[in-house]
Every structure is written in C-alpha cells, then in structure tokens.
Length: 258
Image (cartoon, rainbow, N blue to C red; front, side, top):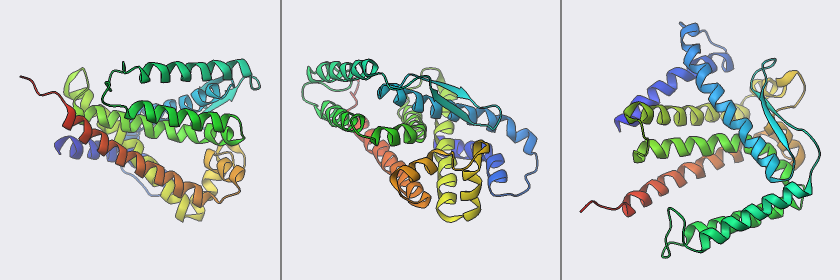
C-alpha cells in the first residue's frame, strides 16, 4: 500500500503541469514541476511512438519513430509503402513463436499451463485478420496509445511483484511511471468524452486539423471522437483488470522456498 500511495502522490505532482495547461488554471512553481513532468512525458511519448513503429513493421510498413520538436509529442513515419516480404517475415516470426510456446518450453508456462499459447494463437489470428483488411490501419493508429498502456501495466506489475533488479528506487520509478501514464490518459480521454473545448484543442494539434490518433480512428470507423475515447478508456479498464488477475495468479503460483 505504501508503494502505491507514495508513487501516486509523485505521479500526481508530475502531472500537475499537464493539468494546468489542459484545464487552464494557474500553477505555482510550474517551472520546477515541469522538470520531472517533461522527463516522464517524453518517456511516455517514446513508448507511444515505438508502439506505432512496431505495428507499422508488423503489418509490412517500414517506419521510423521521431520526436516532434516543432509541435510537441512525436511522429512515426512509414518510409515506404507496404512490403509483403516484411509482412511475410512478421507472419513467420509469429508462427515460430507459437511453435516454441506449444512445445511447453516457455519461461512462464510449463506443460500443465497452456493459457499463454492459446492467447498467442488467438492474437495471431486477430493480427492476420487485420493484416488482410483495412483494419490494420486502425490498429496502427491505436497502438500508440495501446503501447503506453501495455508499458504502464508492465511497469506496475514489475513494481508490485518486486521484479525490479536495482532496489527500491527502481521499484518506485516503475510504479510512478505506470500511474502517471494511466492518470494522463484518464484525464485526456475523459476530457475528450465530455468537453467540447478539449475536443477542439485535441483536433488542432500538429498545426493541422484532426491529426490526432483518436480523431483519425473515429474518421476511419465512421464513429464519434467521444465513442472512440470511451472505448479506449474501456480498454484501459480491461488492462487494469488483467493486471490484477496476473498479480494474483503470480502470487498463487510463486514457488515457496523450502
């Protein structure tokens, strides 16, 4: 509990500069608080763009992630069109992973625990289905946000389960970063669901009109920005439920020293 409370307070302090800009209120000592905020936010942006980049490559588009120092945030650019050889290599890698896991040699799962291979097979079928339709374009757009949430959950799991390697400082940094990413996205998504001003501000980023990931997803799906934000918030909720389930499973299956 102490880990969560202290990390939550640290994450909340780091988030204040973002809140002051997004919600338009004056913040004392904003310059001081901006230092850890910028550090955490560029870590968040790094994983966001890495998520776009990996998904581009997964669906056969060579891409390069960059920071956007003109408008803030980042951008990931496909350097050329779709290359089916790259797509084929991606499929081959997934097939090799399934074969390895189904042999029962995975690190986390032995012959009596087949849940991971089943999940991987279902995920692979989903990826193949997306690859053969226009759904892969939506997946590429979504996986910037998706990568943020995956990494946040991973960091929080490492902290809770004590899997960090360099002591208490690393454990608190992991939990603080995970909570920061979650809180940042909760504020953003709730604002997009309820505030016309937030929707306008989001739509004007990158010096253009409707350039944000969620705006583009809404356009491709023929949905509203509010509904996309709501579904994204639901995805976060599912990931948090998955985190709790995994932590409980891990602790129940942890080997007790003799």
